Amino acid sequence: MPTSKNVLANDVEIKGSIKFSHDLIIDGKIEGEVISDGSLTVGENALIKGEVKTRSVIIFGKVEGNITVAERCELKSNAILVGDIAAGTLAIEEGATFMGQSQVGKKAETKPAFGGAKPQP
Image (spheres, rainbow, N blue to C red):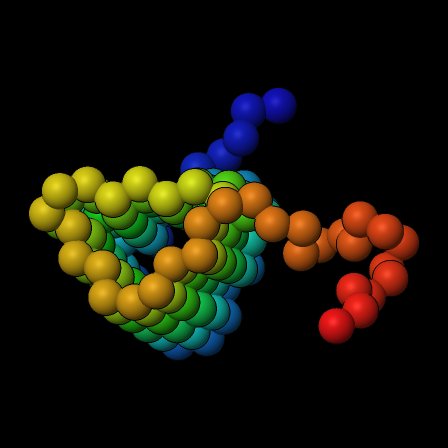
């Protein structure tokens, strides 16, 4: 079954949370959370004000908020990100603007390796 790509065009404005399961291309304005197990592409005309939590993200436009992705975060040359990034891998092209902190690398946040035992101080 081929994966579907959904598109929110540049004349779309949404206030509120968006949840999707496959791939989404946003070229409009979003004010609120964007949550998914899929991939997100933020188009060059897009403006997202809010948290982004997806499997992966490619940013051509502007994001004002924190990004948490399980796999890859890419900031293309015209991208503007004002917020923090937590990602498995991070790629920033020359010319991109990033104002925030980044935490990059694989981390065991979803399942404890020792059956839930907490480390002793």
